Each structure stands twice: as structure tokens, then as C-alpha cells.
Length: 423
Ligand code: HAM
Image (cartoon, rainbow, N blue to C red; front, side, top):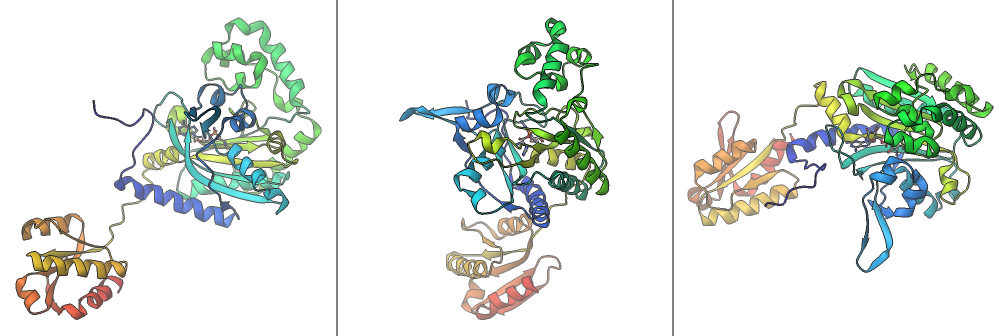
């Protein structure tokens, strides 16, 4: 049987890459406007980073990680990154960035890996664009991050966005709330789905955003986090809402928005594009004030988000917002005969030295076949080199749009093409 790509992964062929460049360019542009610099971290990390960073009871860590070791060192366990916040914090600590700057603003793009059940919008290898701000506890930063996500999506032309915001509290107020939730769900334990039964004592907050209909019904009337926030979390949340309001961001408060990673404190948010259905979360993020310390660093409040790039592309495609492919003009050098082939090769190289796209046929195809190929690659100019032209040290330039032709000497050919292409 032919070897196929692993389930839940995708090939992106040249005709799709223009769309990736389109979104990546916009992402880089908005990061510049908000003062973020790019980082690149390894695709795999020490497994302990994710166990400690994301939390051992989360679905991502307990069920979805690609973990491996190599034959020469069975003791050392590595994991393909399921997300990039833990890696960003690791890089922040390992490079002692906290000692060099008071505020760090990073962004990244790249592959993430989660062994989940593949479906439309959910893959085992997917790409995230994300950003992290380390070093500020101000709700101004929370609002900036949310504004950046919303602005980016709106600038693409996306409508029907649902911005959901919540506060998940902090280690001061969450334990008491957690206890209240356990007390609330304990009498109904047997009716909860098997996953939520497991979650009850480990992470009862996750029951609140379980998609199972019975669990949803059972959680009606559950105590709400907003009534249990400590003074600091409450004030932070009120300020965040005021800043979002000032920025004109329309959002919905969702007290059940918990998110699947353990590091969140205070702000949690998600941006959904509802027409995507089950996998409508295009971006999600929140504050993680305890993560740097959890990974043995100094106390450093932080916030960030990540956007699913495939989901964004799906949303843009659904709304017809992807750009028409750009057809670059190019040159085809049509050689007839062996001697002409060598000259054609020299001309191609001279044009490529000028960064003009130039192609030729090396296989001795007929004139008709070469012209067909020139049309296929959308050549604007075809340079024709036959024995007669070679003998006269000339070439014919054929303007493909008008079918007009012009004879030029080989000495001036590259300059002539260069002025035609570059204007
Ligand atoms: P997350 O919510 O797990 O957060 O992922 C962020 C986004 O990645 C999701 O909203 C979704 O668009 C996309 N995504 C996640 N899983 C998949 C998948 N299997 N297939 C396709 N797309 C997917 C994080 O990863 C956090 N690190 C975000 C963050 C950064 N929080 C603070 N800083």
C-alpha cells in the first residue's frame, strides 16, 4: 500500500500557499503595530515542560500528547508541542529575558500537535499564530491583547464574531469556588458523563464547559465564579470590561468559559466564528500569572492568546474573503536545437540574477509543446532562440498578450527584458 500522510495532518500545495502568506503577512503587520517581536522555539520539548506547564489532568496533557524517546536514551522523554505558551515561558526563563527587559511582547507562528479525533477544523497537526506578554499585571494589557485579536479578524472582513470573556479567579479565590462546585455536583455525580465524573475532584470547573447535553443540563444553577472572585480579581475584571468598552469591543460575558489549560488566572477569553459549527473557536487565550513561577522563574504576570490558522482560513473561505491568486509575470526562454539550449540557459541565469522569473525547457520539446508550457506558467514574454537567431546573435521577444514580436541583439536582450518587466 502506498504510504499516506498521518491521519489529521494536511499537505498544503502551492495553490494554497498564497492564502497562508496572505494571513501571515497581516499577522506580522498587526504584531508590529502592537509592538510584538517574533520568536521561534523547538517543535519538541522536554515532556516535563508540558506536564508542569499545562497541567497533568488537562485533556491536552492526559490524552493528546505525542510523546517519544529515542533509542539511545530511553530515560529522556520528549513531546511534540501541543501549544506554545509553555515553550515561550521556557525560552523566557532559559534566556533570562526577565533580567533584560521589564516587559516582553512575543509572537509566534508554527505547527502544534494534539492527538485528538480529527474532524473539520480539528487536526492532529495544526498551526497557531499566538502572542504572549510577560511582565505586566495591568488589565490594559489584557484589553490590548483582546483588541489585537478582534482587530485582526475584523480587518480580514470577518463578521459574526462572538467575543466571550470571563474571569477564572486566582489561587486565592478559586479553591473556595472549586469546593462549592464539588458540593454542587457531588449529589449528581452518577449522572455526569464519564469524563466529568473524573473531573469532579480534579478539575470541577471543566464540568461547566462540557459539551455533553446531560452535563450541560446538570450544571444549570451551578454557583458562578463571578460571585466568588476575590477583591483583586473582581477589580481586575471590572477594569478589563471598562477598557474593552472604551475600545468599542463588543463582548459577551460567559461565566462558563473555563478553557482547557490549567495555567489560566483571572482573564480567560475566546473568539468564535459561529458559522464554523463545532470547531468555532478561532482564537483563545487568557492570563497566566502563575506559570513563570510554576516553571521555577520569578513572579511574572502574563497574558496571551493563540489563533488556529486553519480555522481562520476556513472562516475566510466560508465568507469568500480569500484574495484572488496573484499571477506574477514571467519569462519563458524557448530554445530550438542543442546550441540554442546552452544560450537559453545562459539567458535564464542572467535574468534570474536580476530576480526575474525565467524558465526554459531542457528536454528538447517541440516548439508547440514549449509554447503550451509558456502559456501554462503565464509567461508574459517568450524569448525565441533558433539557429537563425543564434547565427545573427539575436533573439525574438514575443509579447504573449498581443502576439507582437520584436527582434533584439543578444547583447541587449537582458536589459530589454529587465526594463519591460520592471517598468
Ligand atoms: P487553545 O485554546 O488550546 O489555547 O488553542 C488556541 C486555538 O488553537 C484554538 O482556539 C483553535 O483555534 C486552535 N486549535 C486548538 N486545537 C486545534 C486543533 N486540534 N486543530 C485546529 N486548531 C486547533 C492555547 O493553545 C493557548 N496556548 C493559548 C494561549 C496563549 N493562552 C495564553 N497564551
